[in-house]
Length: 416
Image: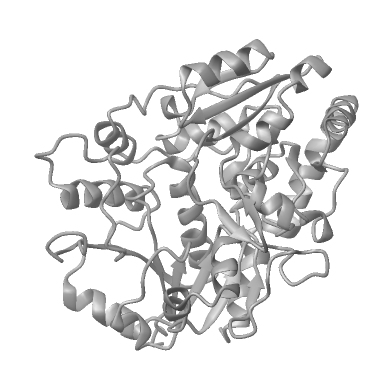
């Protein structure tokens, strides 16, 4: 019997630009999910952005070689060592991992090319396929640019044949994000591969990836720092003062620290402990948070290691986190892939309401909040019946976020 070749899916990603475990897991779960659905999957970087400073810490380091080393380690970890390419458009245009001819043949033969995060400006070889799709993981900014008829944004989107967004409330009556008449965005939640997040799941560490993370970033990525089992945790950036957007005379902020500060007195309102594993913060921020009863951890002590990051989530009591002001006030319905990972690990999640409760059931395993009182009530509810909420979290992850639920809908929308 002649074997029928598998259809190919290419993910255009940004892992060398965001070389942390959260971004790697996000990308890997799309790759693994599509692979488990029977596709031959490939990962390509062709964005033209300089690799992150974490990878290139000295001026004499070959940035393309270091980025390629990092990508190769991640892909080897998931048994995809011959399924990646790095196109060094930020410098000399060389190809790593695959040859130029192989990459261009891959584009031509792919059933689907997914522009992850919308982070890659389409090349002619992407556009020529007619099978390039946009996958937005941070709604609001692009939608507002379309509202203002920003030509650069229109030109960027035009080569795509379908459009997906993590804004799960997009288009609903209470969502204040503008709806584009030309580009029809379809809500699609972040997928998780649930079995990779079970407490008894210990994926084999593949030589190369953690070591390349550690050597490339300068952090001791292999050191184990596991999540505290009695503490609600989260991982993220504290202060990012760029990317504010203006819409109908109001300014909408990107930085999450503005939302955390609204609830800074939370630890004093309950006996429950809370820890924030943060990047992009200063000593003054840490002193302020600790004076209010928060535990603060440097996220980069573990978040450059795939296993340590995963275990931090799996060993936590649950997640407490906020969303960006943009998503909160405009009610985009954005839901974090990290929160989906906590749910997959059977950990209850308390997260700021963005409109996602129009789509996802809450009050069992998942709680949305808008006020300090709602957070305290959620904590008390979870702690009063912890095992029940853990089971509910797992059930919710399987029903709404598992790859075999999310990705078939995306594929069906593009005729696959």
